[in-house]
Image (cartoon, rainbow, N blue to C red; front, top):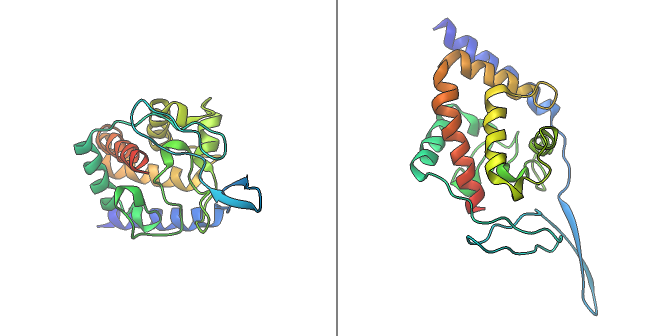
Length: 199
């Protein structure tokens, strides 16, 4: 019983510390021009299309090919996400987790590094900074590498960019042991791949 109380206290402290560390940054501003009116639109810079096709978004970027994922493992990831109470801080609307906390951002586009840039969410582009720190400048162009880096992030954390997650990861490792790395992390990553594919 004391062990569960310690885990709960660590999780609450991590959530509070994390909510204080988040900063809001607006989305990408895109300007379009017609013959009569200039319009400004704020949107996410990534668009996913069918396999083998690419589409240029209004910000000039090219959308990645369709992302494949293991549906059964992704469903297990959804189960783990709720079991671990990740939805106390986050939603993953594209994966069906539409009700949850708003301390952290919607993780639907985590695979693309587009986390915390949506208008109205707390958080900053921590995952994009993490990708860039690990040599991945365009996660949409290499979703497989992005998935590997998310797995690394969930396994090792990043003390500089995400101290809250470091505390969470330590609590999960303490509670779950090897299951965290061998079962939970792969399923959570697969769930994020599914969310990105459906975004």
